[in-house]
Image (cartoon, rainbow, N blue to C red; front, side, top):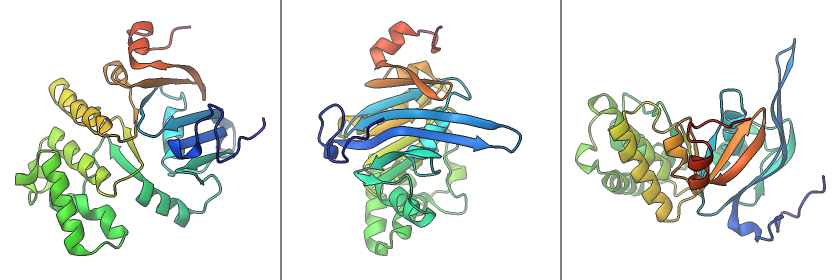
Length: 256
């Protein structure tokens, strides 16, 4: 397959309108006895400001795709760019720098540090970025206010509900003003009412221009995205708008 120039994409869009660009992205896990082709020559572009949901059954390749996009793993072959920087062959230190400066993560399990209060949890990425204490404290407090937790800034995570902990995680994901927010099952541990509140917060962030990619098993969550990518057997099997997905797959599964 002929590789496109890093300055342009197949759609004709300039490279600076693309946050994530992948070509022939492949990941093979070699367990010794067997090789598992988790991702098979995937091509993908995610536009700046896009809200994209990645769905599919267990083993479909969606988590592998998330890990590669998030620079948490390296591909077996293929190329991909984050904000115009080719990252497929970067070493661990360089990948860490990309994660810290360009990507905000939101996890199903929140991943907050129990021993730290909320403002300290939100500050963490700025500590790794060596930002001055006063600057990072001001920014962390402003983001806690943005997610409705300004009055809880000195509480510990174990003093919060699940929805409140996820709001802290969202504030932490925003603190470095990332180009891309990756959310892995952000409503997976929440009840339906709290899930709705978290999705309202995320869709508001998208409305402000944030680029958002959500991996989810929940068809209601996927249906709110601008674009849905349905993975299966390591490839993209279907793409469409959130509305098209809800109409085509009301049960949230890809039909044969």
